[in-house]
Amino acid sequence: MGSEGSRVVVPRNFRLLEELERGEKGIGDGTVSYGMDDADDVYMRSWTGTIIGPPNTVHEGRIYQLKLFCDKDYPDNPPTVRFQTRINMTCVNQETGMVEPSQFPMLANWQREYTMEDILTQLKKEMMSPQNRKLAQPPEGNEEQRVDQKGIVLKCCIL
Image (cartoon, rainbow, N blue to C red; front, side, top):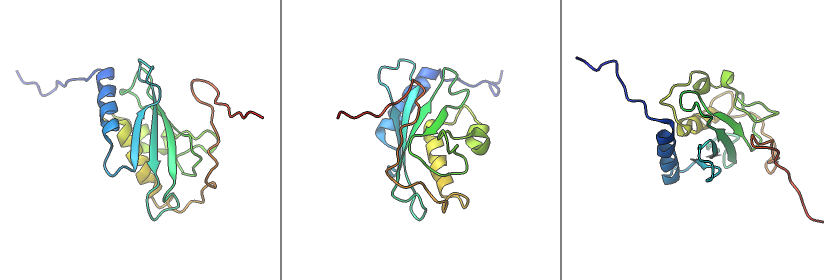
């Protein structure tokens, strides 16, 4: 009896705990990082990612903040990915900051083995692609708060 067709499917929470541990240890050269957004979220759905723009591109030295939302069907289906920091890239909706799966092959052709680290690393590579490396970018310091999936993020000041 061969076991060629069988494979072990790691449960969602175990998979997310592995990703959390890896994210906390740091990734590669430190230009990509991620972690949980809400430590009280027992379903581990809300994550934050950071990408430091690659050298020799218009993104060089910029720090991009992202939100990743892993619904209960992750990792069978991809997370939603949204830039909090305004960015001009061919795969990002300029109004919402959402990474459009139809324009970003990793999300469009999602495989269970892919991770949030893979997504962030691929987005960094996408910043270096010919179609994105020289695109004019919004001025720095324009990190307008976007609507969060949990509700509306408000800016306020006390006068």
